[in-house]
Image (tube, rainbow over all chains, first blue to last red; front, side):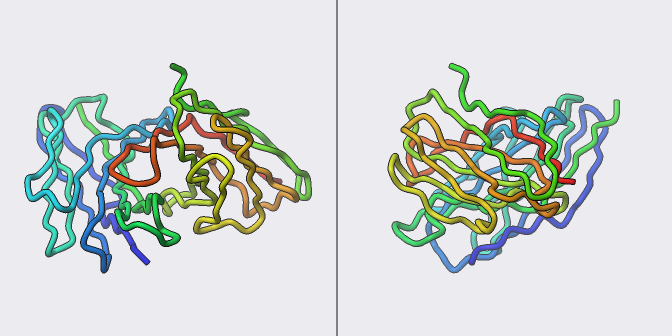
Length: 119
Length: 114
């Protein structure tokens, strides 16, 4: 079974600075997808960025980028020019790409990292 | 588009009571999911429905049942609520079960069982 670990329960950053959230995962599969979701105090889960394991290029979405290290099974999220609206719980998630099996389509989440942004 | 809607938003039950959480999506998605969120544990899959007419157990199915009523609606039922089922429940949907498709989440239901 796959597991996802976020070792930083809480992180903080000053407005306009850069912060990196860590995520590691364990899998024996070679084809999968990785996601970062944001959960603000409203509870709504919002997709921030996704990475397909077969793509070597790191995904970017505006101020958000990832450092995907497949061999190390590491998937960190970098937030540049942090804004007050970035304050939220961030979840790393794994999804198998293999056909069949009971894990198919399921998202496996990490424990989450609470990000505080200081003005 | 309302996306994924869930009712109710909050609910308090006594131990042993039953209730059904409702979920609907208007994006014509094939796959739907129910997760629960507990402090320090992220979200865990309870049940999912890959397509209309099919349902399968996820990671933590005990104490729950589901019904995929039609393509739009996927309900979660607690037959006899227990304090261990106090949690926040999220419904999600995606276009397909396969592929890098995003899962869209509803606003969640906070359930307290006393």
